[in-house]
Amino acid sequence: MSNEKGTGALILIGVPAALVATVFLLIILVFSGTAASAACTEAAGTVNPNTVPADPVAGYSGEQLTNAAYIMNAASALTLDRTAQVLGVMTAMGESSLVNVGYGDDLTGVTNPDGSPTSSLGLFQQQWNLGTWGTREDVIDPTHAATAFFERLVSVADWQSLAPTLAIHQVQGNADPFHYESFFGAADQIVTALAGDSAGGGCASGTVALPLSAGFNMTGDYGPRESPVAGASSWHPASDLQHYPNPCGDQIYAITEGTVTLIAGYQVSIKSADGYTVSYLHMKLSDVSVKVGDAVTTGQPIALVGNEGPSTGCHLDLRINTAGSTNDAVNTLTAGEDLGGPSAVAGFVNPEEYFTLFGMELCPAGSCQRQYL
Image (spheres, rainbow, N blue to C red):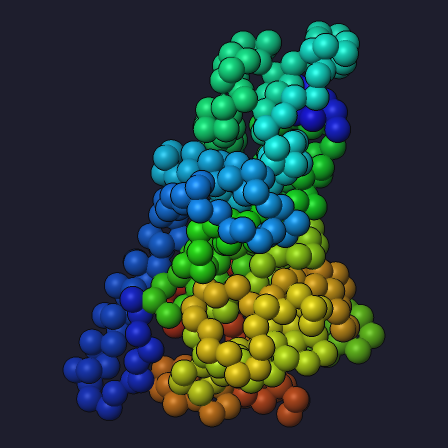
């Protein structure tokens, strides 16, 4: 339960030979970086509650998806971003399963830890008798309830960089701070389904998007390392990303457009329009939503985070190989073999340097923690 209750458009451009053109390219990259920073924080769009998908999304359907739409629109009305929408939806999942209900606490004698009677109602199970959430009618109005939640959420210090469940806990006051953690993946899928593929990973610059919704952490770096688990390489040609700590089921988004060339074992590979290949690892094949031969767009959902293969826990292994690349700028990135890596990492480049090329940070200091496992 809740609230003091204490219970349960950057275009890929090659580097021209002419000096003037080279300077022009640098100008483009600088201005694209500014645009990328804005894209990471812009307000999310609204959705139509009357046109939610007919088929279930992550096990939720009908009225539940309609209520999710109301929550998303409340965030948008406050000019909040997609991250807030996901947090709002996952909170209501954990409180009411996205059903606008009351559990009858005010009728059955359930009390708060201080002995006061409870009156939890609505999507967020807000206690109307406290006098701080509105009237009984207010808290069962989805828009009012969601707005009240978001108004408190944004007053939480660093709410965007906290683990989602901990940010929510600061508002809801659940006895278990990690109660909401298991709902993140489903909420992320619902927000994508209702907002459309254009929702992407929550941050994009032209033809490059983040592979997970904003607020993830980096738990494995590119380069030499001690092998963390049997079968894992001691030279890591990738960046490991996750919404710490370890939620399987997070939506994975294509970081750039291309064609799916491989789905096997625990890997999806997509060959970009410029010939280089982006691979996403550790998912269950049953959680892959594309097939070989599909043309995918930047930010399109492609799979869910998993823990398959040699893995230390649920995370996304993101790797980029420049073999076959026709993009001169991408080809300037230093590959693993040039850093002393074994032949197995030939052609693989640092994903952080790849994103920098497009004016974006893969792990920005303000919202991404480096927690190497």
